[in-house]
Image (cartoon, rainbow, N blue to C red):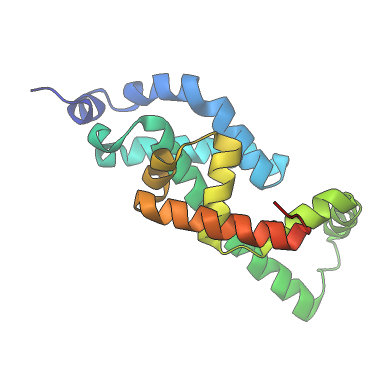
Length: 178
């Protein structure tokens, strides 16, 4: 029997060409919503590069290609955020390099982004990485629990409990009562 996995191995990057056409724009939007838009293009492209390299890991029995791609993108976002956090910590310890005027302007631009965005960002930052990934995959990707579970490589019950905890924390952080 010829499976989708066999097809992926046989066709190589051609198999993902259709996935690229179908999902690139939404992956780029997802990354852009979670990070700066200037990095979204690069990470979206890297998502598909990794998908081509790891196509033998795709298993259609586990779900569709869309959650698999979102899982790759989510991992890239985490990696990017860790690198960004290390950079900010270094800047806090040592200050910006003398020729890094653009960095100062970006920080000023971000601070001036607005109260609502700041409150929501603060509330999202208070979530654990797992809770934040679940919330943002549902909100930005429009995923159901099973697709989130596939994207993150966790059980469906884990998704439900992370979402429940995240909702409770977000309500408290934003002063919302339901």
